Picture (cartoon, rainbow, N blue to C red):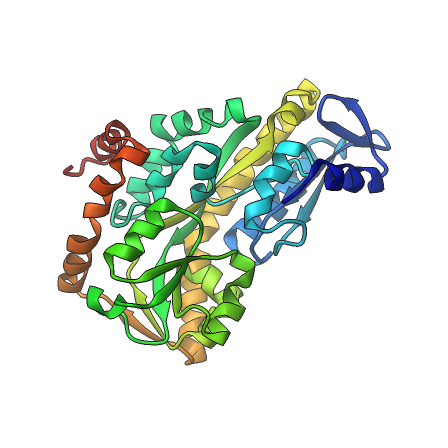
Length: 336
């Protein structure tokens, strides 16, 4: 856990001054520390670097963006507290991370078998519901700027995962999310919450049997080297919200913030544009490596998975909000 003492030590060592509430300035520039937990060559990693490039270009160097990938600064459970304390200014956590802050409505994105592709997803992230969700973060000292895609997840393990019964008793790593816990339990697996940075070793040593990830995360973390089987289930979505420390953001000079908004809009278009391509390339690279056998689900198998997983929606309706789930169904044009 990040304490006030460790935060003070961190900021003191950085030799910066606070010229306005939450604004870090060094030699006349605004420094934005952008921390994330995945590799630089993932869609999120590339999006962060694109934002850095555009932000520094559009502000003529008035803003400097320092990108820290691969949990270099903070692990999953630490980064939101670091943002709220001001130790970093920008994050792009997965949408499930907001549950512990009391914004469990974001966990609707974790519901299995909810979206049938990216067109449906965009109806939520680029529509009224997406904006409504970002607004929930304001009173927590956080401003939401954008949604970034990673992709649709696949299941992996060291045994075939063809039908739901294949999950019985398997220890499956998940990120912290009550919805994902319920998903794995519905399949008969034992959910294991674990930091992303620890997953490869846990798979390698057998601490967990399997996990779920979009192909780009699985490939860049080399999980295919320690997983003999994977199913292209595309059962759930993994995305991120790009967020900033609200006092920092609100305290920026208006012209600087306007140019950063422009940079974020373009970086978002770039990141979401490459996400599907990156996942396709990663999947092909893993297939070419030959260490993992990939199974493409038949329509009958998908229907069997859906029969087991769709009840998770109703089970979690008290947590997410039955009205919100129905609002999503209505926006997607799907049956409740």
